[in-house]
Amino acid sequence: MFNFIRDKIRTVHLKARYQRLVQERVLNLIEVTGPQPVSEDPGQWQLMGDGKSAIGEAERTDARSQARRLVVENPHARNVLRLLEIYIVGPDLHLNHVAAEKDNDESETIQAANRLWRSFLENNSRHFSYREFARRTWRDGECLLRLFSQPDWPPTVRFIDPETVGPTTDQPDSQGVLTAPDDVETPLAYLRLDPASGQLAEQIPASEILHTRIGVDSNQKRGVTIFAPLSASLDRFDGWLETELMARKLQASIVLWRKVQGSPAQAGSFADAAQTGSFTDTTGTTRRERFRPGTILTTSQGTELEYLQPNTNFDDAAPLGRMLLLCAAAGAGLPEFMLTSDASNANFASTMVAEGPAVKLFQSEQRFFAAEFTRVWRWVMSEAIRFRLLPDDFFDHVAVDWTFPKLATRDRPRERLADVRLVESKILSRAEVARRDEADPGVMQSEITEEIST
Image (cartoon, rainbow, N blue to C red; front, top):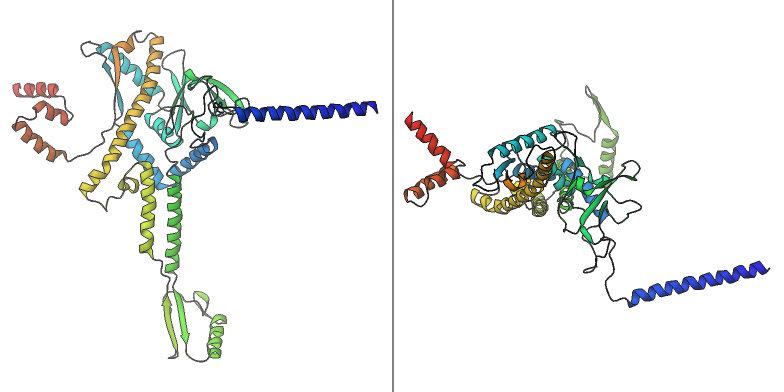
């Protein structure tokens, strides 16, 4: 009896203590005036604004999965990705080593660097390419490239799928990226998960990962695919197209309306006879209510036949489909004729004007990836310095110059005639005309002199 009373007293005491702690915490939350730490940015980062992020981790994962489906199944999404690849990281993309200062002669070092970079690309041709790097970035919103130092030259790189980098039970708000306590923009390690179990498989130091993100701010750890604003419009367009195709099938289904003159009883008996009756020929048995192509109908004067088909109002539906494609084109930043590969509704002048924003977009993307590829180049050259294949002060004397695919295609023969007039008027030099044709004026002049002398 005494133990029962003691347990009751302890229960009441614990309940009162729990209520007191809850009330104290609620009071602290009510009285606090300063901002509180945010779980998305761990470490003493303060909340700014309403704290609502544009897209969460679940939405980002769904957008990535949907983007992968679109680029495989949807022709317009595939066309967007293909255009970005050929215009930004197409076959004309290559690296040039140049002297950091024009007065210095670094020809031997430049030749060695060119040879080392070519050997790196050749040995990693099955694991790394400019196109795959950019394609992963656009499609997934981010690209994770792991760097492996080797005991001998050249080093090795591998791509990491973004879904294999994620939070763990110990770090639920990390998004798979551990950062400095007071700086979310300084990554320390990446958490690679086991695809089968979802448990932590490896903690990779940030120095071994080149992480490229797009579509987000610098203080956000993971990127967002470029197809996030396109997916809804493209799915709606597919639904619209399916509806219109179904309408075409309905329109092709001709309904025969038979009008029988007489009393309702006579019409009813005629319909019953046609429904139950049948005829047999060499091709089989067919009910009289159905007619094959080429069937000859013989009726009396009291029977009238009329063929009906539904009106689908395709002229009214066509602008809706175009509007959906225009929404997708706006989300991709491309003109309509690039998204649909159809420029029949525009002339040359309007097409030239419409491609202006796309050209600027491609130029911006080229500069962005030039900076990202330079990060890969610096790591590769650092490995070459470690192997004593390049001097220690290599980066002080040699710089990198990326050559990207040419964007604008013009009527060069007509422009060349205008250049000749400008040269005759002494407005342009002959050297400038040669540069416009992507020729070296000095080399051209020496070759012309040599040809004249011979």
